Image (spheres, rainbow, N blue to C red):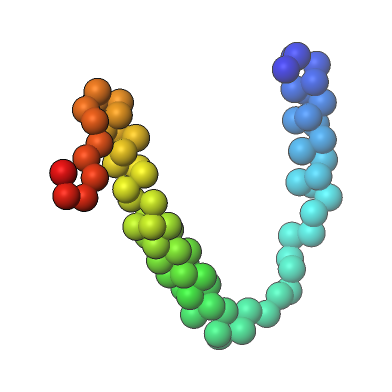
Length: 75
């Protein structure tokens, strides 16, 4: 990125920051915190399930990189 385009981008971002309202006067329902917590837990459990599902493939990639042949069940 050239120096001129960096300064233009910085000027644009500074202008947008000055034009945004400072007070939102928003209301957060008491259930919002539990909903956010549910989203975080669901994301973590989804990621763990994905890793569990593809664990054999992940291990096989590292075994191949070490030069060892992956062994299957019963070998």
